[in-house]
Structures are given as C-alpha cells and as structure tokens.
Image (cartoon, rainbow, N blue to C red; front, side, top):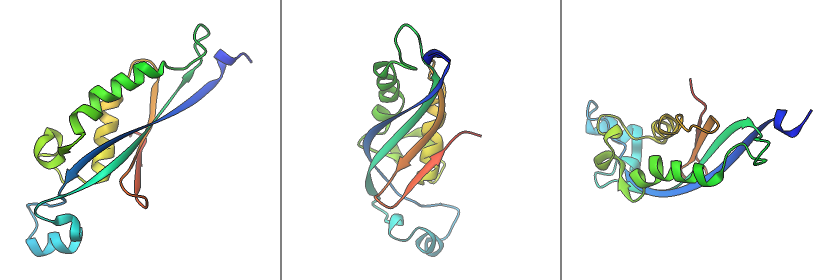
Length: 140
C-alpha cells in the first residue's frame, strides 16, 4: 500500500480565552445556584480554552500531507478564534444568546463551525476548559 492510499488523522491545538456565565433564565435563582454553583456568578467567569481539532484524509501524493496546516490555521482562526477570543460568550456570540454556554454546547458549536473545512474530513473537536475538564464532540 502506498502512503497516499493510507487513511491518516491529524490533530492540531488552538487556544483562546473567553468568559461565560452558566445561567438558565427558565430556572429560579436558587436552582441556577444549585446546578451551576460558582459558574452562575452574575458577573461571569473566564477560561483559557484549548481546542483540539482532529481531521482525517488520504495523503496527497504531491504534498505528502492530508491538509496544509496554514489552510487549517486560517480557517480555525476565522471561524473560532476571532469570534470567541476575549469575548463574553453569553453577550457577544449570537449562538449563545439563547443557550446556556456550557463547554459541552461550546464544543458542539465549534464542531458546527468547522465541519465545512474543505480539505479534509473533520472527525472531532475536543475542548479543554480546565486541567480536569474536557469535552469532545465527533458529530452526530
């Protein structure tokens, strides 16, 4: 089997900082505090997120790659980093105006934004919120 016939996966990490508040307006203040704890702070709180994007594809015989990293970096920067970095997810990102911006929901939103990458198949997105918490979404 030649290299270009082999299926290869690529993982690349990105970082951004953002704030959010976990609060469901359909619940009472007491319920929000019980469910979300300190993450329900009325002033929000922030994270330094790490996002791993996993792609797959066959190796291009001309380049020896499944995707040009510069193309991927540009796409992720446009679709994720620029809209999210140093933003309040609740207030500045339209996708979260009517949703509780948990990291689970953030992970799904990032996948949705990246699934149209034209040069390789998006396999999964993993978002690391803290040293202890990470979430992964691999599509439906």
